[in-house]
Image 1 (cartoon, rainbow, N blue to C red):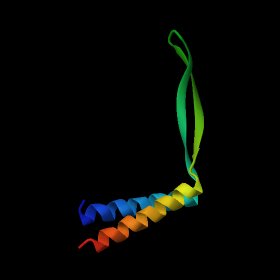
Image 2 (tube, rainbow, N blue to C red; image 1 turned 120 degrees about the vertical axis):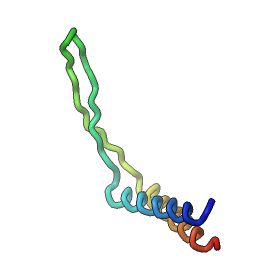
Image 3 (cartoon, rainbow, N blue to C red; image 1 turned 60 degrees about the vertical axis):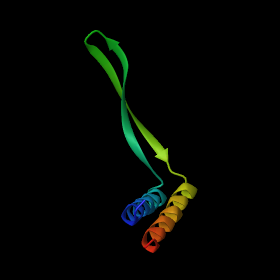
Length: 75
């Protein structure tokens, strides 16, 4: 793996770890069809939340920092 790829992966891991640490997770809306009677459909929108554990965020930040440093040192 070349240095530029390692730098990019390290930076992405670092940013993802920071985002997970400060936001604590993310949420999204899922639409499902509950019933269908001929041309009529009953759709329900559910809000789902995904919590990102702090240990995972800190681990991603640490791994990103290590990969970023290695990307700069491998010359």
